[in-house]
Every structure is written in C-alpha cells, then in structure tokens.
Image (tube, rainbow, N blue to C red; front, top):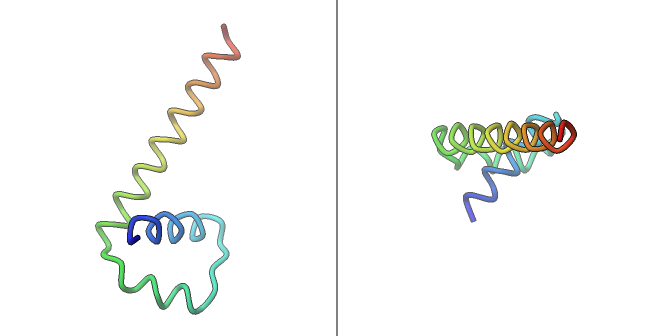
Length: 58
C-alpha cells in the first residue's frame, strides 16, 4: 500500500491540495519512494502526450 500512498502524495502535491493528517502520514514515506514515483508519473505523462501527438498527426 505504500506505493499507492506515494502516488497520492505526489499527485496531491502537484495539485496543491492536501489535508494536514495526510501530510503528517506522508512523513512515513521514504524520499526515494516519492522521487521514483514522481519520475514514473512524469514518464507516463510524456508517453501519453507522445501517443496523443502521434494519433493526432496520423
């Protein structure tokens, strides 16, 4: 379940909305977990944008 908590922490930090209890709970996550999660989400976004551009351009 830590993986999902990492994804939620990264996405909510990106959106700028996070409750105080959730922020305090995120302190249990390791920094490397958050970094790897953020990098994977960015790679997925780039892949999605490239696929969309390829689909539109075809």
